Image (cartoon, rainbow, N blue to C red):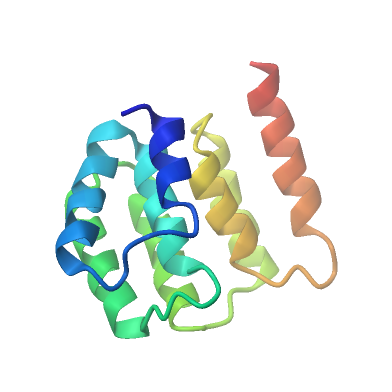
Length: 140
């Protein structure tokens, strides 16, 4: 399956209530690309409205993803996801530090989105960094 097709297939439709299917999709994502695996992480951090995705279920899937993914960004990104699942505050500075790490890996849009969405950016300083990273990646 192509990366874009996989990501579209889980967008706001991750099967939180089906542990076997969740595990299968986690394994499949890691076989497709790091960006696809981070798309799963994004879904765990931001479940669609009305999905009934309990925190414990999302944390269990996150643990499976931690075991399955092999990428230099996995620790920092998945740590952010865990904090987001637990509704722990992430400062703009913390988000921007992780975004700086992600910037070194062009095309990791899902990881960048996680870092970008991890803080509330109430003072509007995170978005310009996000936009500048995307612009650099798109120029390549």
